[in-house]
Length: 238
Image (cartoon, rainbow, N blue to C red; front, side, top):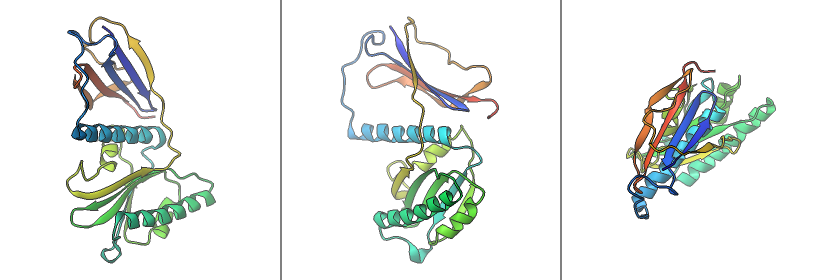
């Protein structure tokens, strides 16, 4: 029996994924392949969105960058998501222009959300430069602008889960639209086949790191294979 491993390496975190190779299968043989249900596919797609967002955050942002909330005055609330996206496009075009004037590239991740009671707002993660607060106040004219420095709980694990919410993952939302700028590269995983006879009982953790217990996921997947994923974080951020 063999298992495969993927590692995604970031400055302050390493994500580890371990799973059985279907070529060899788990003890007792593999289960017959089953097509996922629509509900299962929704969960799979949402998990992938969260994972991709987390990787973009860990690779391209730091704790000195901004988490922003753009709200609407009641009388200026958009009538539809399409209108909200037009408001966003006008806003981010102005912000990008201001960044370029200062010789800086703008990086962003955003989620436009409308609550079940009709309140609109946009959560925005963006790289911070000295004039960011002034730029935001100048470019967003529909309501209040609130911002704070990014928190690093779980090295942005919680933040990725929060900014990717939609109406299917959070019943408090009526609709949501998630998007990112194109200049957010993520690392390719380092892959290897581990040809050992037993599933590893211990999780790997190098010196200077600790295991993020809230990141641990393990069990048996719907194909009958063991799997495990977890993250190790630096004891001291660099």
